[in-house]
Amino acid sequence: MGASSFRTVKSPAELTETFRANGLKVTPQRQLLFGLMHGNTVHPTAEALFAEASARMPGISLRTVYQTLTDLASMGELRLIDVGTGATRFDPNTDDHHHVVCSSCGEVRDVYVAGSDRLKVDGLEGFRIEEASILFSGTCVTCASDTVSRASARG
Amino acid sequence: MGASSFRTVKSPAELTETFRANGLKVTPQRQLLFGLMHGNTVHPTAEALFAEASARMPGISLRTVYQTLTDLASMGELRLIDVGTGATRFDPNTDDHHHVVCSSCGEVRDVYVAGSDRLKVDGLEGFRIEEASILFSGTCVTCASDTVSRASARG
DNA sequence: TGTCAATCTGCAACGGGTGCGAACTAACAC
DNA sequence: GTGTTAGTTCGCACCCGTTGCAGATTGACA
Image 1 (tube, each protein chain N blue to C red):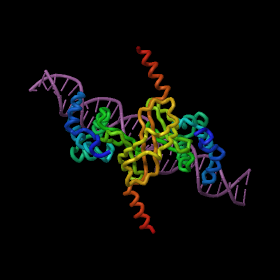
Image 2: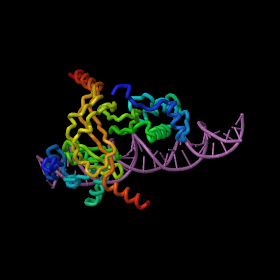
Image 3: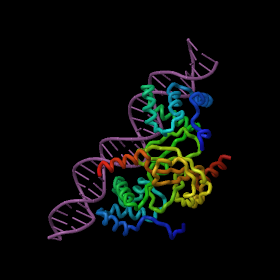
Image 4: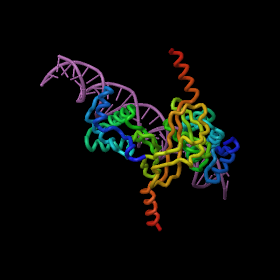
């Protein structure tokens, strides 16, 4: 569970190779997005990445951001996750893991779960299961302390 | 885990009482929806309930369906679930349970999981967890056999 | 340097869901 | 039965996230 086993999205250089190998072209827009996803741990939305990308390359289209992200996802280089906050999040961590989401601010963090093979599950009869995802939700430390300070300001 | 411990939405008569007790009026539209949810095990979307309701009460508004369902949910009489198929599902089963979704047809079924307290979870530091939901996804028996028959038709 | 398929952008459109306000009606009092 | 009024219903406009489309552009390879 240490950083040594952490499997994230390939480097921009490697993704360039992967794209070319798949017959896809490598454009400046794509290279920018490769860089923005590499080592990214905040599970950004398409809009958030678009904002970052726009700052570095004014005129880049939101459509292109979506296109590149779905290309990356369909090649298995990143994961699309839905934590119920409205917009799809993009996760460069392709390890087998799960997520926590703060129900107040929407922050998402990776969670590693061991022992799920020992769960007793009733109700899967008739299904060929391909995936199981666990989503924790609660309040992050920042939002919790905000609540506390607001409460004491009132009191 | 038998039917005896199954906790579903209250009967239409009980919901009538609950609504009145909360200062809400009991309209024909609401009574119709109470009946449609009672004993419902298909995890319908608002649109699906709207279609059923429209057949019995032409002219009922989709807006009213949403309104009544969110009222029921905020009273804890049913649960809103998101299985990643786009639309919110409404689940009259208020037991502590989880779900499987067929990635092909979107069918949802209830799943009971025991032993989740023995999971080893890493990454929740700093979060006050309020909920954990497990979502299985795979192919239901109907979609699996459809695939088989299509494959043999081709062969 | 040329060719051409792949890509980019902007806009229209779509699905799910919500805010709003005028018309309506359940609930309670008399 | 009638009146009063707060809660509801309906339909429309609109929001958000996302995708389809098409014309202009450009990476990749000869």
